[in-house]
Image (tube, rainbow, N blue to C red; front, side, top):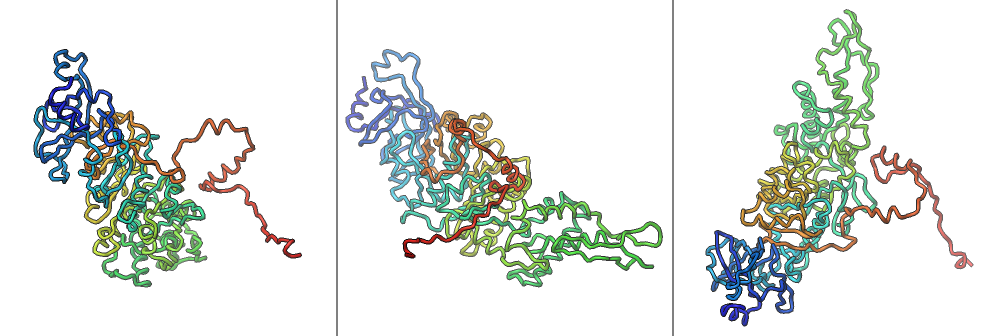
Length: 619
């Protein structure tokens, strides 16, 4: 039977759950009342689940309300008969206090603790209005609470972008769909006019999953573009020189490295002297200044120096027979050197970099790297002149008419993916950092960078340009309007510095104990119990916690429409295997393999098209 105190509460408040039994720090133990034995409660026509890990409770304190999250539920093995008569059901909840509302304004943290016997209540939609505020501007609805599906789950857009975030979950947990829903909710928005027209989101899509998901609100750049996509071009001359040389030459150091860097520097100076790029002073140019120069001219000048032979009494007369052609990567020819004192003689000043130059030439001839080494209008002529400058590149990536830009890197050879990601991030960060006083900079118009499959290039042991740049964004990006969203199925492999700087976590189902331990390390001890449910979360269900969520919450992410979902679903094995066998042409498989393009064909079919005339109209 309920106690007299419970009877009084029940007569006035159907949200009553139980009473405070003990308080220890931020942990509160609650005895559940007999009135909630069913596990369900209907309040104002809405159904609420009681005793769900991750659900919210409210503890009134006069003009102040304390809010907490259920972290554990249980019951006594054999309730005491006397206690049962007194109203103790033997069922209890463990609650972690997370914030308080004073005068209708919610704040994280608590200034006072409840007393033994204080009543505990369900958090209703009205209460959540006090937490999140009645004004939805700046709030994004991402789904519904698992404990009360009629209540929307909202996050704060400001905190999400400026404090960074992470979406973590095992394969098949709904990670890609969650990301698609999050970004679509932001781009389609819940602002005063229903959208955020100046939102700026850049996604690095490693597997090519998101072009279909954002086709109507995104500009897609791809190495192998469809008719409705743009060609992805990344000018090599905007990359870090050290990273570029590692890729082009296999790595050089000492005097050999100086041979390359000195020549690159002189070519960049000559390019500036020809074009007069605004904002550049010749005295301030370095080898890393993003100025165009021709790799073909670099190769030609260096190979010419390496293979030159001389004759004459002073060994200073070149024996060139054919000048070659830098544009076609044809090396000049010289009389072969001869033994003895008659000559021709080798160039004693040669750097010994012929092997590296041969690799550079092979890279330039490899069609797989055209997006980088032959970047369309950004490819310099031999004198360093270009048709398009970096402003056109940035306008396409972060200044387009659509709120989302997807860089589809699925067609990029794996050998260069890590360097490429690092270079893209550095181009973006450097441009926004140095333009922080301008309206196009990150402070006036912030940017969210979404990093798919982050464990591939942000592992601690890699120590590459991508990791270095993302660490910088994680530590300093907030000051310059650059936010990051890290997406990974293996959080234990992501660099700890990067993950620890993420202020908001969307944690989906995680089965691996090492991954769960990494996520648990980001939470206060009292809330660790929330993550014990990670292995049993449903697909598309997440625990959201951190700066963007005023309260940690377990929620079901809203699924996008079928046509707006990423191409990450599993193959339909049964349906595919149940079809009758059909003729197959594996010559097409080999053609795609060799061309490194999924849509390559083995035989080109020329179809002649003729206009159709309606004979009845002619008559």
